[in-house]
Image (cartoon, rainbow, N blue to C red):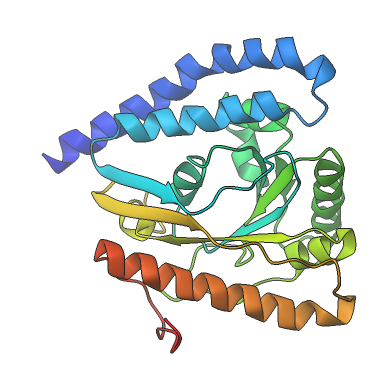
Length: 256
């Protein structure tokens, strides 16, 4: 039965992309000339992921937490990263964010084309020039009044423990004086394990946490800011784990 459900989940996911592409293309053609942030095109692309979730009988995903008062106010959004399924889950939030993702994903037919047209940001790992190009692209998106979405761990952990956070997203927030919007995720590791493209039964949640302002901070505050955001997300993922009855790794924060 598991093989049948996995085949169904993959079939409906691929079908969602194939059917969704002409819808996305129509939205892109109609809105791109007067939508410099490609907000409508990007939101249409995220809804394809939401459709795939709805058609997947193995996943029970939901999101909660206060949404931004103004969805067009740019934030630097950061989240812990458990699996590829995080992308599907976080797409359920009802506002647009430009994703920073590894360059190989942009080469996937249809999906990669939609990511490029939606102004998502390719990141070439372990390449200094590529990293600088990604940061410049992120600055551009923020100037277009659209939030960016990053996984500051950089990759998925092979264990259940969060990896150290990288500096990039926090430097952007400090440079622009924009708030950081933390998101905590728990439960997706079971949905699609690292090293596997197999869909598995999972209950998962992503929760928006209170924004952290940076306007009064200096570049020297970067380490403290990064540590604060990481601690908030760590506490948040444990709270979700207790609520859902799922496991997360590491040592539970004393304040949780």
